[in-house]
Length: 90
Image 1 (cartoon, rainbow, N blue to C red):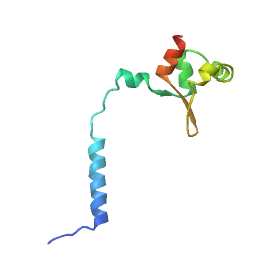
Image 2: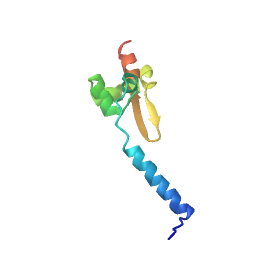
Image 3: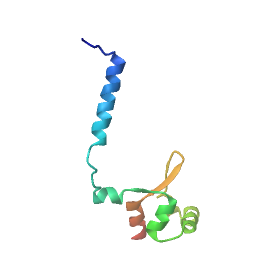
């Protein structure tokens, strides 16, 4: 008995197999560069710099050099850890 698959069924099977292969990939450790370039929301940025959220909000309003570090992605505001490091080391 021969079974034929429709093109749509073949695509679904291929997608399922690809998803399974991707899911079985081992977890890779982040490099130091990737860790330093990670995105931090305002709360995580405050914890990262050991300051309060209120301080970050005040700096966003009063310090133009800090405001430049703020990135907006759609509706999310974030900071990059490496840029915060550079700012703190000034």
